[in-house]
Image (cartoon, rainbow, N blue to C red; front, side, top):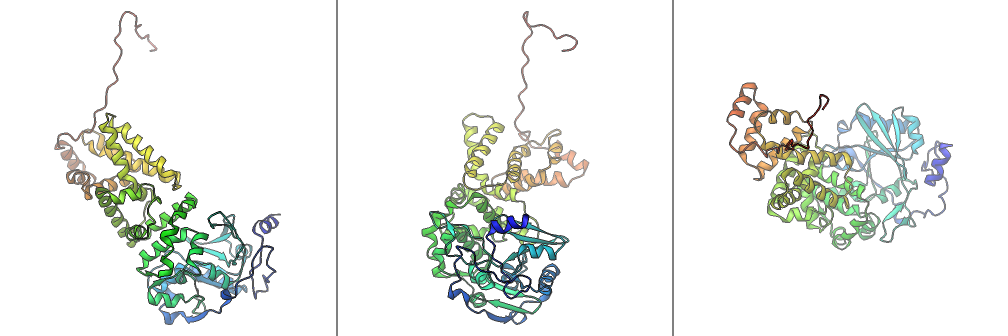
Length: 469
């Protein structure tokens, strides 16, 4: 029953060319035959001669390829993992492409699960390692698109040549067989790597219309690799940039998160600006980057973020987006305070207005928004440095993230150096050191005083409380 449902949903076309386990079936109705240009034979390279060391491939990826190949299927490490190995970088992920269907993959790996509705992939687990296994996909010239040309449904399995033609850049369309020490290159990606050129496969304008997120990926990969964008790949971007507004917010959020966690986030944002892609992507980002104070804060924050990524440390998405949107929260907070609002309600009103405006474009996950709110809301509490307030603050679940955020404000010149030094000493100090810090807290550091609720005067008409009152 489930198998029939999957077949019907995906208009199944078996991709197992040359495999006894999965013979090639006829293309389904509506699927266009592969174009002649996409049936080219790949250039073959010996991987070790191109600088790839098999020792750099994790055992999880090796075992995935070995298992699939021993059962009669093709299996290759593909995409960014191959690109980074050739560049001498440490890949973040290793993905495997195969001609086995998702059902066939899950039967071979006990710890695996199907992911996705439109086009299923398989996550194969090896301890803490996860290998994403995808089936070769086919070319379709009559796929369903929206009014702007963005592909909406395109879920047909194909062969390896078609799968290569579907990929975005030539440097991402490389297939590495770690068992045979072989690289298959269908679109001169190895040559482009040596030339340090970023080139789109196929007609760039058509590929951007199919998926406008490719324009953001162009900026991200150019920033990450330092490669020059080939002129025909760059030319349509500025004209087609408005198509970004047609992309679902969830996809934009995923792409922005990849950009911010790339280890080259600052260069990526600057590349977005050079290509004219930053306006409207984050509704407030263009304003932030055009304000001197905001730009300084964002540069400090992203520089620190990139340093952490390159050191192999984890990054909180909530912290990242809190830094990007803080300047508008701060500006609106100050405006409300100047208009006579109390500081804390004014801050929460400013946060609500910024997140409401942001949510119309970028679908930030609720848990990340919750982190952002807490990081921002804790900032005024760092000014309260008397009594038990500092002790209560350091016990807060989000204290460390809020403290790091406050230090960014200090480094950007937005908060006083004395404030950052006091809290750093308070965190590191023992009981005696903390007591001494509290005793010599500068005047005016207690923060806004809480207003006491006034009790109504007890007049003749006001009854005295009884014993249960």
